[in-house]
Image (cartoon, rainbow, N blue to C red; front, side, top):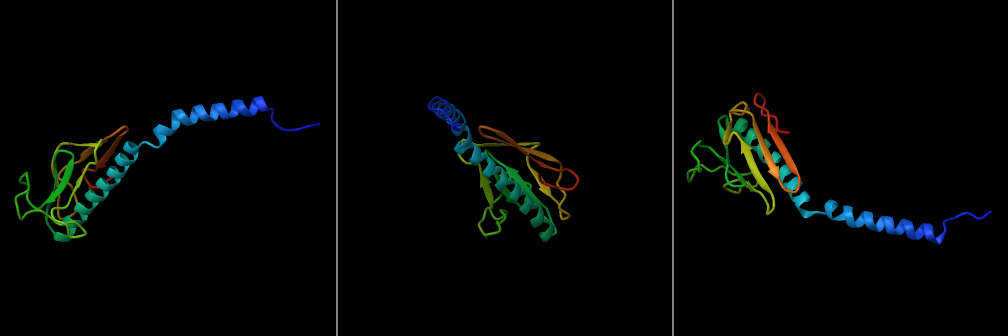
Length: 146
């Protein structure tokens, strides 16, 4: 008794694998997907830093939403007045994150602030759009970002 695959079975298997690779690979390796996910992670880190900075400063830190950017300010005035911009963990001033090309950002409810206890002025939902939609939520009571 011989075991194995026939030539016809091997060719059919290779053809099916090729068709699947042609359909799935562009979706799996899309740069926009990785850019959107990377920006969502960067934005979550940015918001957590803003919360921790408010606690460390014993005062409010305002998160200002611009056109596809977020920045930190010690004033509620938008745009942030010169001298009121806050520095990032690496010392860059103003500390902000900007969406890469092909990725959009919108904040439901607009600008908000974290108080000295790390609580936000209100819950917010940040929507990051690319070829897939991602959302980040800032919980109203605790400021938890997820």
